[in-house]
Image (tube, rainbow over all chains, first blue to last red; front, side, top):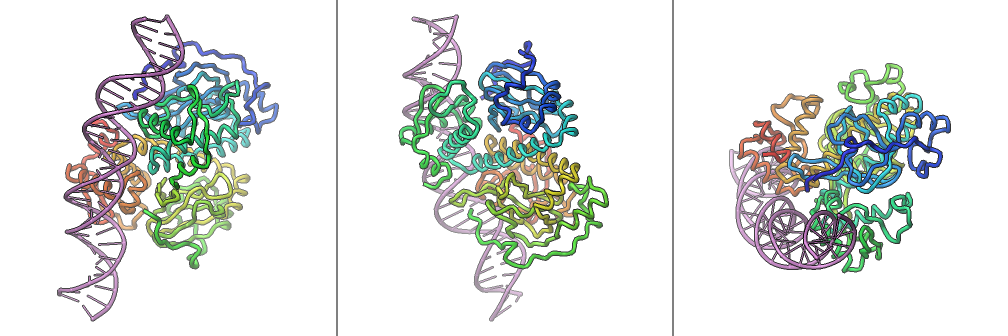
Length: 251
Length: 251
DNA sequence: CGTATGGTTGAGTCCGTTCAAACTGAGTGG
DNA sequence: CCACTCAGTTTGAACGGACTCAACCATACG
């Protein structure tokens, strides 16, 4: 339940490579897709590429929001905590996703890697300054934020009104849809089935459930033939229609 | 639980007054606050002021998003439904709040008045076109969306991880903070205490609880001396510190 | 091997729900 | 003025889905 001991980015020298935007495989998924080559060069000057291992804290809620990030590989989770350690994960971020945008000068949530990950780290001040010169970039980010808000509302529906089974079914389908659109950038090797890089505790804290309920519900869905649980970190949707029905409570 | 019978804006001629932005009391709360007098005039040409009574549907999830709205008086709720009628209210909107921004051409949630309300209704196409000419307006709305996203994440924490008592305490405090900042534009007469214009069913659907649990929890908070329940639609926070503690689970 | 970590399964409990009934206050009409 | 209705709210009793506590299993790693 509690965040336990995790490494922090600032605890040790981050691996910062001189940035190579040229071969960026996920540019089409980010705001970089709307930038001209010249603009890419200018952006490149404001960022560092950082490699971090799994379970590394990128920043904590309340910290000064000095940096913004683009996930280029791996998975990141963002979450909020209650004083007694209860945790709500508000999102999982995949390659192409942008994080750190706070409405004031401090982060409003914490961020931690789920897997080993690579991120483009921007200076917040510099990037915000560039917004004025590159309004199309700001527009892209603004559109992204609107998307996230819509997703957040969908998640509120899930958290407030869905049963455990509906939550798990919805979660699997959302992951699957995302994988279909974005391609599987999570793992280099095209693994069969759906990648579930996060553990049961993370899934529980994302869906408002306990680990035990998550586990039991997976088992139940497996026994009912809707899904298969492959070896660690992978699942397969067997009966998608049934899962869709389960996710909305119409069964 | 189900939406039941509600009037629809399109069912009857909406009351559309020729718009008077001049005396607008809540301009400072909206994106109009960043506009020049000339720009206000241009905006005014694209909008209609509509008066609607309580429990009127403004639009439904899935409808083409033809209009955007600014609430100028009254209270509006936005919500999502599951096929079987379960409802999650994702927000209550007060004077100054903007609604209808969808990430594509259709609304992603439904909107309905809680009280009688007045709204500025914009043509979506015209307003979006104006964004290009008035980037500071778009910037203001973009900042608002970021705020809403942060609020949505806070609400996810509430829905996923808080107990009934923590939910109600948080809800009352959020309402109180909002009233403190924005002033009481909900009722003309300065009523003593905190306005609770929405009924128990709405509160329940906002907090992921049933009416009965909402009622019981209010009673419990009242008996414990943290709040007072005044006549219909009004409450008073007696022991704010205790309520703050209850809201975060640290008691 | 032994140990650690993450996942699964079981048994009992509890918080919030469900079902049901009573209460309240505003509005209506005899 | 009172009887009646009706919607919203409160209260009570019983139930149940998810939680808690606990044991067990599987895989990885020293």
